Image 1 (cartoon, rainbow, N blue to C red):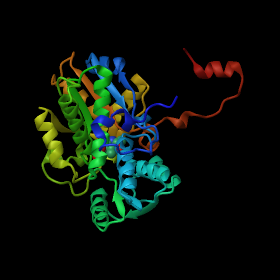
Image 2: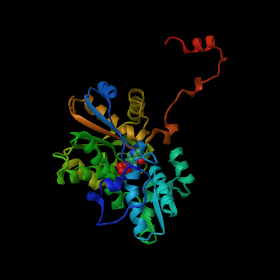
Image 3: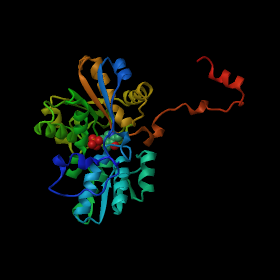
Image 4: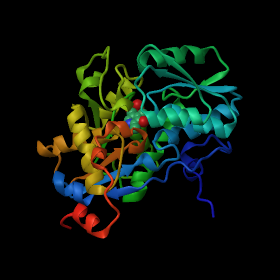
Amino acid sequence: MLAEPLLERYRDLLARGAEAFPITLGEGGTPLIHARRLGAELGLERLYLKFEGTNPTGSFKDRGMVLAVNRAVTAGARAVICASTGNTSASAAAYAAAAGLPCHVLLPAGKVARGKLAQALVAGARLVIIDGNFDTALDAVRRLGEEGSAAVVNSINPDRIAGQETAAFEIVDALGEAPESVALPVGNAGNITAHWQGFSRYARAGRASRRPRMLGFQAAGAAPIVRGAPVEAPETVATAIRIGNPASWRLAEAARDESGGLIEAVEDEEILAAQRDIVRLEGIFCEPASAASVAGVRRLARAGRIHRSESVVCVLTGHGLKDPDAVQAEEGTLNPIPARLDAIRDAIGAW
Ligand SMILES: *Cc1c(COP(=O)(O)O)cnc(C)c1O
């Protein structure tokens, strides 16, 4: 039997009347994993990882894209358009393909992970690389959207945020209650906004009796909210959060303040160390931006700002395979040896 699509599962909270959602790629329903080994390393007994890499295009963007594209079709859009640091274009391209709509993507030159670019291209998206950063690209998309015909599917589209609320619903459903804290990477700040709105909606609907503290983490080289001013030339290995002027800036601050949470910065070295630890201790390979959540929680735990028994969910926003260039795998040692058992035993060394 086919699993019930995400938008049908939460239709009572998301749908307008009897609207239909014919387009689905099997988004959502991602695992929430109790991270025992990583938790022990961080001194946290109830650390959970929400792995969004199992979405159809490998990131949480699919949760919002499915709603945005279904509604674009209903509204009679002739194309979809987005600016992207990578994952939005991969997701938009896939859902537009399923809807039979052309997809146009504006990408900042030279800053997009290889896997994400391949995903958009192979799904038939039309790529325009611009000589500027993400913020410039989003500005152009905004204006083109106002001219009509193409639906803008960036997170400035409220359907994107509404669809992404489903991650919060799933976390509560899995734990039976909202956790005490939820940690997320913050780029354009749509996802922290969506999670907060989702937890709030679930609490209002009587499906959770509390709301978590929202812990947002920006990369130190792209931390406008932490600094309180836009960053002209954002720089970080975590390309998905390489954004200098977040579209949902004020809403992210509201999520932080209303939840009694925080938005802080983590260094690229901490992000890469967290990415490695997550996969070496838990077997989950996420992309660098995703690991900012764990890097931030590690900082807070070390400083005694999270209690050992507190329930903490780190949202791992995207799959590590999207950006294999970001990890320093030791492929250089993979030289062939003779195919004899004695040689193989020697190569393996001690068990
Ligand atoms: C888009 C994205 C982010 C940032 O989310 P925002 O909603 O822009 O804050 C983080 N991680 C990954 C993997 C992403 O694709």
